[in-house]
Amino acid sequence: MAHDTTVQTAGHDEHHHESPVVFGFWVYLMTDCIIFGSLFAVFAVLHNQVNGGPSGRDLFEYKGLAEETALLLISSITYGFGMIAAHKNEVSKVIMWLGVTFLLGLGFVGLELNEFAHMIHEGNGPDRSAFLSSFFTLVSTHGLHVTCGLIWIVTLIVQLMGTTEIPERMMSKLTCLSLFWHFLDIVWICVFTYVYLASMI
Amino acid sequence: MSDLHTSPSGESHGSVSSYIIGFVLAVILTAAAFGVVVSHSLSPSGTLTALAVLAFVQVLVHLHYFLHMGNGSEQRWNNMCFFFTVGFVVILIIGTMFIMNNTALHMMSR
Image 1: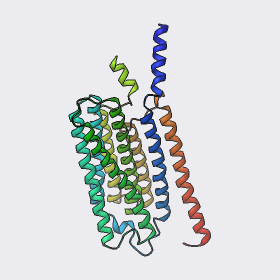
Image 2 (image 1 turned 120 degrees about the horizontal axis):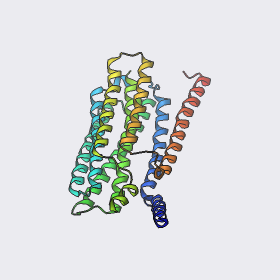
Image 3 (image 1 turned 90 degrees about the horizontal axis):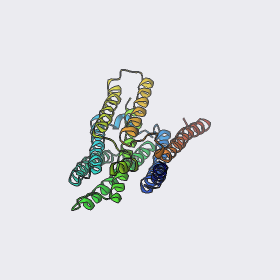
Image 4 (image 1 turned 135 degrees about the vertical axis):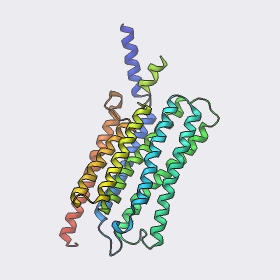
């Protein structure tokens, strides 16, 4: 009985130090959250400073926004299925779901770049007004994060290829990327709500 | 034994059904946000409030179903970091907007 308790407390204690990698990555995400918070604050201050140029209402379209949002949202659940497969140690399924997530993320970045190219082509680049500067900074910072996530997914797929089981180290890498990917989806919720939809009212 | 080891020590992870529940809720909330703006059925300030509420709820849904945040003792430090950051960001955004609006008012720039 007494022995049991000590084992349990030891196990419990050990747990707090068991995944310092994942906790450390969580702390990084929180600092990232502050970066996005600052960029949202800048956008909130500057979104009316259009300098005679177009406002969000003139620029943004529902169709592209809905497509981007759908791709990112679906990629969130496909990554989730990948994590479930990882916990069951099914390497080929993990690779398959990571691949699907990669393609969806790639589609998102493609649509976003297309939207940016279209805006810049029409003379509404980041140099047009303070509103557009803050818009491009905020949205492209998010896009850059997604691109980093894509590189990370490819790296993990390559590392998983040819292995038959998922060691502890690999599991924490997958968990970190899971946090990163879902975090980016949360940032996108704020972007499509406060940047896009709020200026289309 | 191995089950006992993996479930409390690994990060808490969802099941297929919890991911699907989260996904369905997220889709409904996203569609509602688009619907409110597209339909123009509310006043501008009403639409903005509705959007803010929908986004807030959707963030909570994602945190719960996708990031698996909970109030277990093993997540205490994660949660502490999280709430510190949320407080920090709220002060940052509201403070910035207040100061910049106030400055603009005094400079008579709008």
